[in-house]
Amino acid sequence: MTPLEQFLLRAEALLLRVEGVLPPAIPREPDWKRSFAFRWKKRGGSGFLQPVMHASTITLSDLHNIGNQKQQIEQNTRQFVQKRPANNVLLTGARGTGKSSLIKACLNQFAGDGLRLIEVDKADLAELTDIVDLVAGRPERFIIFCDDLSFEEGESGYKALKVALDGSISAQSDNVLIYATSNRRHLMPERMSDNASYKSDDNGDLHPGETVEEKISLSERFGLWLSFYPFKQDDYLDIVAHWLGTFGCDTAQIEAARADALRWALQRGSRSGRVAWQFAKDHAGKLPDA
View 1 (cartoon, rainbow, N blue to C red):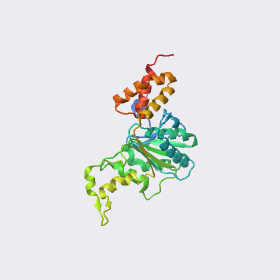
View 2: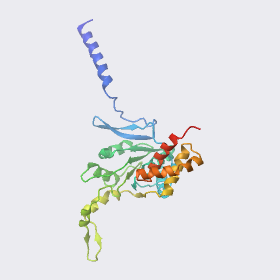
View 3: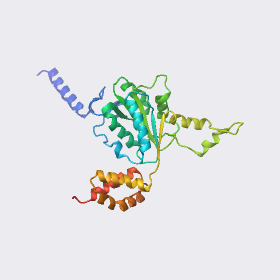
View 4: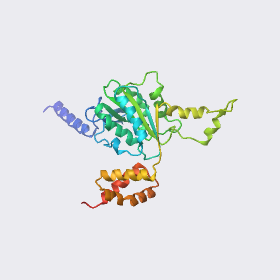
């Protein structure tokens, strides 16, 4: 074997070893048939859509005591998949009341009609334009999902989201909507000092100053606002009963669990839907097999 052949063999062996430790190449186009939910991921400074192989299976019927909010977002999403005018949606309010679950349930309701979801972290909102451009020519209808959204002053994602909603020279893509959830109504912290910026005119009417105007300018770009409130005790117990039934408990077992469910909520300091689901999993898991 000549020295050149030896060198080439050693070089090939080295390349095989290097390829074994390198991450797989970033796909230029995702496999759209593998899933109906995707996450925007970053690797080596480049972004790509990663299919979610085990998406949530929650349905609209699983969500109780938010009937008005459910009806509004279901109707808005139906308009969207039917290629009729529809709004970007902001869901705000008490934690654990079903904001994120409602968006996931809408995806499951309309996935068969071509609806797809792309989850984007707040840190990646500056790339919204790239994401929209990537899917703009697709036949599917895309919801960009931003969960638990809030901003501090000066964050880059704040202005990027404003532009994506309604502020760019280019029109928003016809097949993309943005659904966001937040515990803050205006997505920004509100401070006592903001009140000092209000001014009064000759008629005594109060007008917000520039600081307040800037803070509300993002939230008002969402066409549909849905507010969520803490559940009453009966609402909480109704949700507990639903999930216990889902986990196979009968009527007698559900009734016997009421006192434990209330104690669980008291310990958590919340009667939210999330707390009800967590209790149901814990309680049903401890029951002896029939």
